[in-house]
Image 1: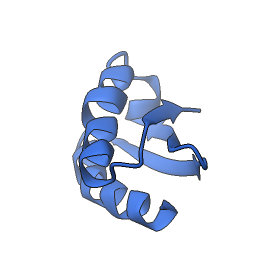
Image 2 (image 1 turned 135 degrees about the horizontal axis):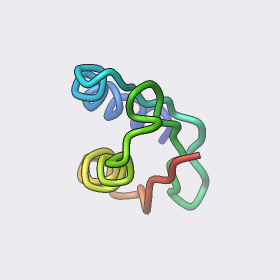
Image 3 (image 1 turned 90 degrees about the horizontal axis):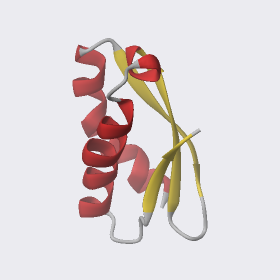
Image 4 (image 1 turned 30 degrees about the vertical axis):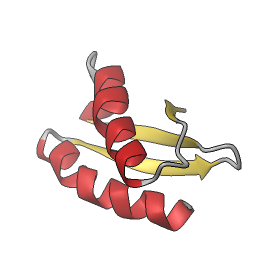
Length: 73
């Protein structure tokens, strides 16, 4: 599943980079929890949780039904 998650993150990454940020995949657990680290401007942005849940998590869940949630570490 890690490879599938990486592919989806590659689709999301340009939008984050346009705002000076980025996302790095840290881990994908057996129970469908994706752990990421927001970088750059996204790391300290007050809207980062919105980006994480409404952007990254939504895209991942649409593409990979086994994904249960996305957490920032």
